[in-house]
Length: 555
Image (tube, rainbow, N blue to C red):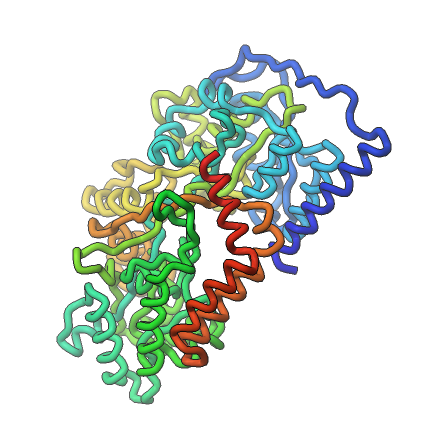
C-alpha cells in the first residue's frame, strides 16, 4: 500500500474515531493544560528528580543498536539520564509501515506519546486537534548555542514552516542545502577523447554523443544518458533530468510564485520546451531508449560495466561508480556543476528546509525536556565540547563510545531528527581537506565526521584499494565540491505542504503528469499534447489544489 493511501486511511480513522468518542461522551472532561514547571528552563540544568519522557518507535529501527542496547538504553539515552536526569521510555512500538496509522489512533483517543517525530500531514492533524505545545519559549530559553547556530544558518524560512500565528508549534529536522543534481562523468573517457569537462547543455549533449561513438567496452551498447521513469527526481535524488529542465527555466514538481500567485511548475510552458529537447535526444538515441523500463539494478550495472559514462545525481554517487573501478582500474570519475545557462548559472529550485517535525504533547509537563534532549543528543553525535557545554568531558567520552560501536545514530537518539548547518555539505568538504593538510582532524569545525576524514585519508594513501574509502572521497570531496560550486543559482519556491484536496487527488494527478511526459519524450504523443495535459490536469483537481495552495501560502 502506497504512503498516500496509508495517510488517507489514517486521516479517515482520526475523523471516525473522533466522531465516535464525541457520541459516547469519550472526550476528556479535563482539558486544562498541565502545570508547567519553569525552574529548569535553560539548556543544561539537570532536574532534581527523574523526568520520564515517552516516545513511539518503529520496529525497523531496532537495527540501530549494538547487542544489549535498545531505544531506552544506549549511549545517547544514558548521557541524557546522567547529565540531565531525563529518562526515555517507549510508549509503543510498531512496524514502520503502520506508524502513520498508529499515530492516527493515538490522535483519535487523545493519547499521544510525550514526543513524536512526524511529517507535515500528521503535524497538521495534531494542530487541528490542539494536542501539542507551543514550543516558542522552550526553544528560546533551552536550545543550546551549539544547535541554535545551526538552526540560524537557515535564516527565517526554516521556522516559518512550523509557525502558526507566530508560535513555534514544532521543532524542525533540517534538510541540507546543496543536495541538487550535479553531473558525474568518466574523466578517463574525456581524456581518451581529448575533451574538457562539459559546462553547457550543448557540451553535455556533445559529450554524451561522443561517449556513445567511443564505444569504450567494444560492445556497441554504450548509453549516452539515462534516467528513471519518473524523469525528474527533485531534491536529494539520483538519475533525474532536473537540471536539463532547469536549463530552460522549467521546474517540474515544485510550487513557484508567478505574477504574485502560486503555480505548479510542471504545467508551465517552459516544461514543454524542455520536453521537446528530451524528445529529440530520445529520438537520436542519446537518451536511453530503455530508461522507462530499467530498474535501479539495471542502472547501477550500466555504470559498473562501463556502458554509461555520465549521469545526473546528488553529491554522493551511485554504487555503480566504485563498481566501475573494480571492473576497470583506469576508471576515473569527476563531478561538475552543469549544465550552466548562458549566464554561467546552474539553476536549482530551493528545497523544503524541513525534513521532519518534532512535536511535544500538551499533557507532558516538561516540554523544555524535549529541547534539552536534543541538546544532549547532539552533544554526543557531534562531540560538542564547546565552552558553552558544561558536560563537555562526558560528551567526549560518550562520543568515543559511539564511534567505537557505530550504531545508526539518527534512530538511536532520544529525538531522532537531523539538525545541521544548511551549508554542511560545503563546510564538511572544506573541513576534511583542511584536516588532511594539517594532518590533524581536530581542526574540523563540524565534529562527528572524523570517520569520513579517516576514509578520505586512506583513499589518498591507497587509491581505490578500499571500496568504502573511495566512495567516501567521491562523495565528501568530489561530489560535494561540485554541489557547492559558486555558479549555483537558487530559484525561490513558495509551498511545501499538503492541502485537503491533495490528500485524495494528488496521486492521480501525478500519474497523469508522468504519463503525459513519458509519452511526449518517447514519441507516443505529439509535443502539443502537453497543452491538453495542462487543461486536463486543471479540470481534474489541479485548479482546486492550486487555489488551496495559494490560500495556505498567504495565511
